[in-house]
Image 1 (cartoon, rainbow, N blue to C red):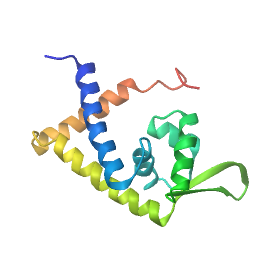
Image 2 (tube, helix red, strand yellow):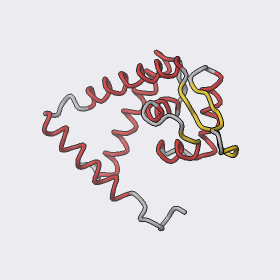
Image 3 (tube, helix red, strand yellow):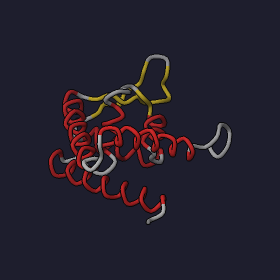
Image 4 (cartoon, rainbow, N blue to C red):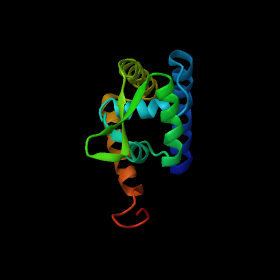
Length: 145
């Protein structure tokens, strides 16, 4: 039997390859863009730092991803009244449409990944992976500023 870290790594890599491949082929998205779209569909108006934290991407990496998305007409960055320091990211109509298509790809690939599981096993796996994520999250005040 393989170790937990190996199975988590292999599962993530396989699913990521499938999702990124379809996102590139079907929607013309580059790596990094699918998860940003997935986040923005429910969290529009966030700043770059928030997007980076949620998507597990370095903040310096999010900038170029957003620039390409802006050039592609998927997002728009703008200031909010009273805050001239930060730019806040919003989906364009084309970005919203692409995000919805991306959500369908995520659902379809999740279904493939979970195809050998019963509904109860899928729910249990989600619960267990949630606990694993909690175990790996840095404690308040430790690790991250």
